Image (tube, rainbow, N blue to C red; front, side):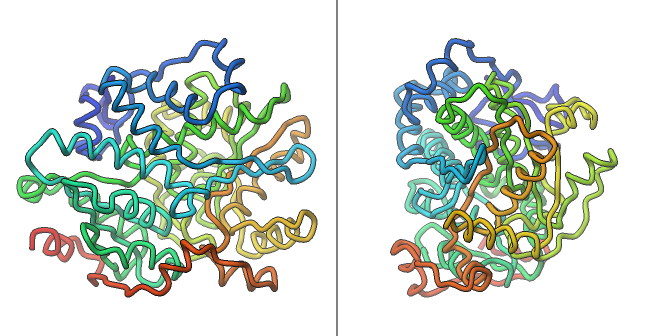
Length: 430
């Protein structure tokens, strides 16, 4: 499979180059040259397949020519070592729980797959791979834990000071080994901007073999399509299926679009955001107007200039009308988010984290005008990762799983910088 840049379709590279580079030299994002459509008979058989089995079929259709099947199978097995159960919350509403991995967030799927691929490629070269990742919360912990002690790799995690929860922060600032945490005096958008600048610095590229573990890296995105197949297959319904995706950098929604392009019969998507609603605003106005992000209780979605919107535009030929045919977009306030958490807890004895709550709100809003649908919202993180907010909202004390509680007792070790690329550059070459 070849991959092209969203800024120049004529710039095409192999999977290895796309994964190791992360970002194209022209600042574009890599896209598969073709998204293969799977045979219709496969979808009839999906309910009988395991999560691992169907994930391997999807991976082989996209990447089967790029590495040995035994290696791809090994990577998929490592990625899908935990379940993603559907939980019913009333008539035609389901939560797809994606937080049963080692760091209790959906990004475990993408991080483990990427770690397997990069580990495989790192073995084939003599230089260490330096992996840069900007995080607004869960990406940092998933990537850091996925790459911990992977030979031939060094991970640098950038995150905005004071804008991630304590548990999220401890999951990637206490690991040491080949993991370095960089605390940035700024927003997530500053972190993302600095990372992109690093990939455009030719002198830095000559000194280090840089790649990214954000969803700008195509290898982070592809495995996130797996759980759309799995969730759809477990519904066993002939009613149109809608997925509501709590969205920040829009990698998760883009992965769902990949799944639909591969033939998965998803009727519609809902892009559910907090007040950082640049994509819902685009869907309404046709104008994409990035802006400084605002802090919310759903901090992992506090993104004012989502990178993967470039991939979404590419998929829809830069047409707002074509995008509207498959995606609706809604933004919600913190107060609306809290109210949804309280309502679902009261009615179903179910605890949502703030991000899942926004997915729930988006789904319910869509279903008001589209009642004859089965809806799935993605519950992207364990509520305990946002314990302070969840406890205050529900007037309760939720339990912290042991694997999270263990991090709280560890010592935080970080490098502090401003929001200037020069400071990061100094950290990388020392």
